[in-house]
Image (tube, rainbow, N blue to C red; front, side, top):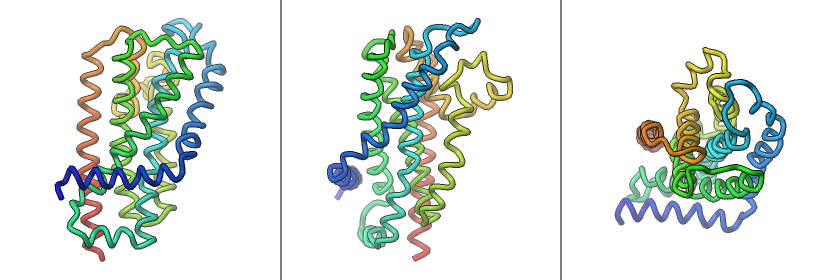
Length: 256
């Protein structure tokens, strides 16, 4: 069986789980919807601050799409913890399956679910008055950017789950990094209004790369130089994260 087919089978396995629990999509999208509705209303007046450009709903929508990717993909490793505890992981590793397929199939599944959830957020944003000046292409690019971030985060979460082997390890690690990464980005506030040290930190924050790329693609006349640079950085992060995840599976297997 080829690596592509193995990856596809792992993806289908996760998809079958989703079919048995379709409420998962709605549950995981509830928090971003609340962000869009409540924070969109709470910070609406921010748009009147000198130096802020455009409406807040236009500014905030890409941030919500990216935060959705971050928070959804962060829990990907929990699935492998369950597989380890149930003995499924040991049976999979005893087969001739390519170890990278275990991660790649899960990443593909996570990218799919984040894309579906992003569509719901975009529809709601349109209802609230968002103006996607980048058109359909810009919106698609914004969703791709979210999927790329989700892929990188899912791989890292998978690595943590496989190495930690406990739910508490995944929960603790993910909870520790999610909010700092969110607030050290321009997801909620324009860069020029952030403290200088936060502006500096944002430059090295993958969440901010995704926010900037999504905003540059969808919410204005698309700036392809900004989009291309950030997409390249996210692609590099996806590859590095996938490599780390594959090494984590190999380390786990050696420990058996």
